[in-house]
Every structure is written in structure tokens, then in C-alpha cells.
Amino acid sequence: MSRRQTRSSYLKNSNKELVQLDTYSRKKHIKKEVNKVKTNYFLVFYNFTYKYVVLIVKVSGVYLLWIFLHFVATHLYVKFCVPKTVMGFIMSPFMTATPHCQGLRWVVYNAASTINNMWIILGTWLCSIILTMKYNNTSEQVS
Image (cartoon, rainbow, N blue to C red; front, side):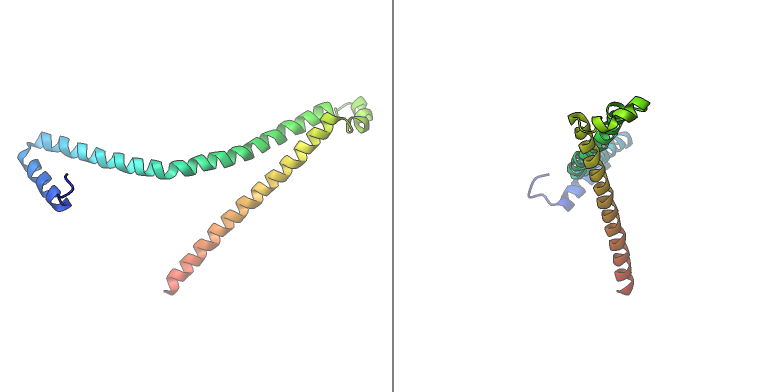
């Protein structure tokens, strides 16, 4: 379709072409046009959602990293700093001062704090969505 050719004239011309085609060719032509439209909608949807999916993966990747660090650090702390034996009980006051135990405690504390903040942010976001939906629904009823 040239720039000067209007959309209605394009449709008229394409309809004339379709009338001249036999039934099989017409179906084939229509399928080709439908596939073009489906492809265009898919590309628009893909381009629109891609940037948001990448952002969600990056943000959730940070939180998943903190969750993984919390899980690993807690198990390592129990294994190396406070073993489940009588000797581990006796040695635990001395082991808590070692650098690796202090580092593991730091990871456990900060990871737990980050996970708590994640839940607060998620809850706040969900509440804002619910309250906005309720506000929009009541404003539509009043109008």
C-alpha cells in the first residue's frame, strides 16, 4: 500500500482481488492476512511485556539471592558454630566470637531483615491495588 493510497481504497482493491480468486486461493490469502495480524499482535504484546518481565526477573533475582543466602547461612551456622552435641554446647560461647560465625550471623540477620522488607513492600503494593480498585468502582457508580 503506497502512502497516498487510503485504507478504504486498499480494502476495496483487496476485495476485488479476492473476488477474482477462486475459493482455495481466497482461503489461503485470508489465512495469510490473519497470520500477519496475529504476528503483529504478538510482537506488540512481546515488546510491551518484555521490559516488565526483565525488570521483575532482576528484582525477584535479588530477593531470591537473599532467601538463598539466609537458608545457606542458617544451616552453616548450626553446623560450624553451634553443633548439636554436648561439646558443641560447651564450645558455643567461644565459637560465637570467631570471624566465620560473626559473618554468618550478619548474613542471617540482614537476609531476614531484607525478607521482612520484601513482605512489607508486597503487602503495601497489594493494598494499594485493592484500595485503588475499590475507589475506582465507587467513583464509577456515583457518576
